[in-house]
Length: 172
Image (cartoon, rainbow, N blue to C red; front, side, top):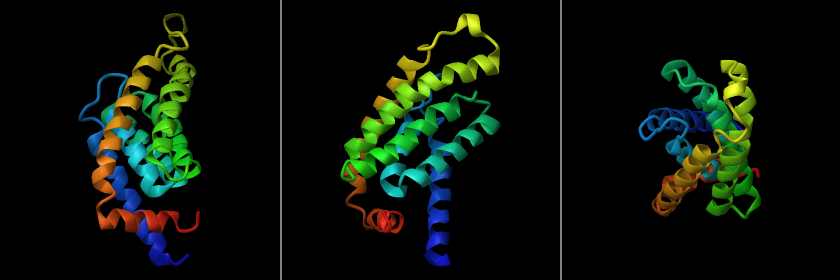
């Protein structure tokens, strides 16, 4: 692949990271980040599994360092982004595959992975239990996936969105 295509991919990835960092805090409720799920689903459709996981990781690190959000920013986003990308890829490039991947990745795996991370981070093992984050993570992932589904109908009519998908998915 030429340097030109790699540069385009990095520019689009940087724009998606910037959008995620700006949009995620807008509708954030403690323990729920539905806009992060919106960006994960849309990113999965545009960028594919690898790049959307990179996007979620970088955004989580930025949110942790600049906004003071605990490590939940990483555990909540990375698994959802990866499974959204894989769901989109393996379910016939269907938004429903991305939505299911996001809901399972963030709502279930991300919430369960958050328990040991937060026990380590806070040292509060007695006050936490394994499913403490699950209801909010599921709530954020489901509401974010539905919002992404609504945006999808507009996005699929925009020519540049198709060009971006072609750029990232041409070797899949």
